Picture 1: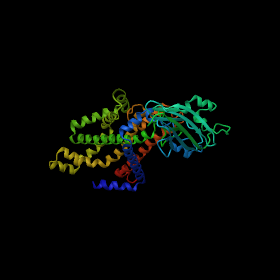
Picture 2: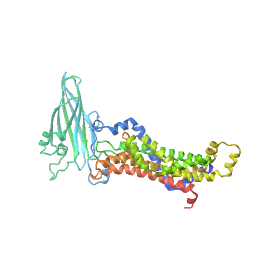
Picture 3: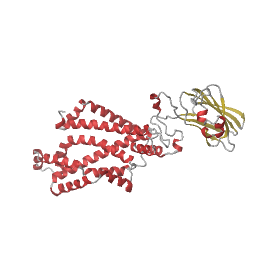
Picture 4: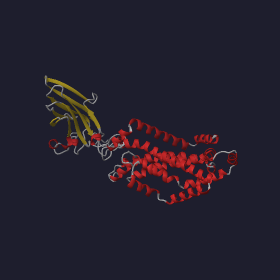
Length: 448
């Protein structure tokens, strides 16, 4: 044990280990943040949600940080809610005991070089019988006033300006999300930068009735990670992919390594038919096609990540590592202290647990750490092949859907690169730590 502690202290002399541990600690911190900030049920709801969940996010929008690397400042998504006093002003004028006139006024800056993708106003009305009536006016930075139209506001009313044909005709055939921001003095269709005002006047015909509204400008950019074809914020699967990947890789690596080590130790100590049976099972398992079996499991049995994890561990236990451990255990079995323990009457289990296995832990640790990224990539590979858990948001699932929807052909590189980079970073971190451990514990590599 003292030798193990001394060897672990040597890790501080390897800069690659420090970098790897910092990356791993960062990933663990992000995993904890994801689990706490977005509980499992909420993550599943967001991942499987439709328009009712992601109605206020744009479709196929790149991350907002794109603007830091581009000369052209693309439009970003923003939401202005009448219930937020910082986003709008709301005043009411009482006309009679049963009627009033409410004015909602949004004032916002538009500093972008491109037009938004959509413009939508979501109304929420409270009334009993008489439907409120709204009139909308748009004020541009150069002083123009554009009448958008009038409509009756039901309980949950959605007014999509870009789909209003009458408004499009008033804007000379230009869709509203472009025509309302267009510079009239520009030779080409270009946005006019400056401060815009949207004014909504609402006539209420009943006591205690009220109307609130949200203006959503769907930009070409959104959030930290962008969105996919279903308007889902990719931050959710990227964050939740971290605990899923780390848990799968760690459980598979620990389960496989410990099981393999114990089986090899029992086979060597009891020898005879026990050892022969283990070796024959190992040799048969080594020639079985690993990935095709997992594909069959995902196709005919279940794509649950727990089922896949069980099969991965089961198929990996009787692998080539058993023969490596067996060769080492056969040398340890002949050691004098093992013979002494046997002579003093120590039981078989005690000898295996207290005298054989501890001697192999320094050799086992590097292989265990190095196996974690292999299983992380395996889980992602299964998801890319369409065999990922249909419920959980994972990195491989994001890549699979990006590929299925032609992300690379359509120039949506962020959709593929973000999960791919996270996979590579996670694999690199564990690989750096694993290689350093191998160099410390392997006598042949200590001088390199």
